[in-house]
Amino acid sequence: MTEPLVLGIESSCDETGVGIVRGTELLAHAVASSVDEHVRFGGVVPEVASRAHLEAMVPTLEQAYAESGVRIQDVDAIAVTCGPGLTGALLVGVAAAKALALAHDKPLYGLNHLVSHVAVDQLEHGRLDRRVGALLVSGGHTEILLVDDLADGVQMLGSTIDDAAGEAFDKVARLLGLPYPGGPHIDRAAQDGDGRAIAFPRGLTKGRDLEKHRYDFSFSGLKSAVARHVQREQAAGRSIDVADVAASFQDAVVDVLTSKTVKACRAEGIDTLVVGGGVAANGRLRALIEERASAAGIEVRVPRPGLCTDNGAMVAALGAEVVRRGVAPSSLDLPVDSSMPVTQVVAA
Ligand code: KG4
Ligand code: ZN
Image (cartoon, rainbow, N blue to C red; front, side, top):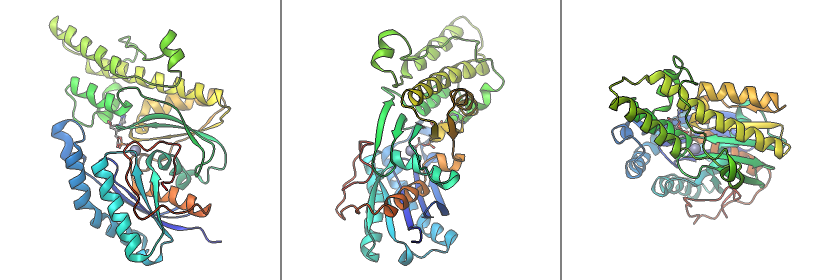
């Protein structure tokens, strides 16, 4: 049997993505981002994101057709992110997917955004044919997942109890006077700094907190500690050493992310880890996860940065996988679910 040809649509946050995939082969990867429209607010504004999706949807679809030479009549299925994410933003993608499915008489698959972040690795490193762990880190999420089976068998082992990792980078960047989104700026500034200069706290890593939240994360205490440090230095009339603060903050985040993820993989007997989300572009995270995972005998698979951040190809990749397995399509009156649980890969 030939591999299924699937068009995927993503609109859960601030990226409008359309991807076309045949099996594990990437044919089109068109993304329009509204990030510039959120800069002056220092974070994603849902209403602004929804409007931007509306404006970008048709041009992004057309770009994907042009890139791949694929016609909508020829695809086997339409896949779309239906959760988790921002409700208004999700609605734009789901409405577009329904319109295409209805107009061209194609099966429609409403898919889980988090599982798509894992499935996308198939486009880069080939089929995931074993149990894998996944660390997802972006502006919207920070989760450790256990994936027994991409189509049916995903568990959440842990997640953040407050800010997402990327959100912490963005907030700390703001404290340091660096532009939004702050992650890449902190990453760059940290290269000239000493990660051991300031001992920032590692959230949920000790005593009762650790017992209760073995694989969960918390970054709000860290963010407050950075704020207190900055205030203290300013009050004392000292200038802030941005490089040292950036490096010490980054080390605290990356230390906790990597140590908890590797522990979770070991406890679950997992030997392959996929890392995804915008923060996966972080140089220190990439180096330390590789170091700690390989010391524990775990292979790390990180898709290239353009596939780690939100995009339509990841939705098409998961879509192709579920179509290949013969999973039943979703209903045409599929709702969006802003807090869709990770245990639900395909919406009914
Ligand atoms: O996955 P993504 O592009 O978008 C969503 O969150 O939807 O992730 C964006 C996040 C932002 O918080 C940004 O600051 C962070 O990823 N980020 C980074 C780096 N590049 C992007 N964080 C740390 N280091 C980086 N190099
Ligand atoms: Zn995402």
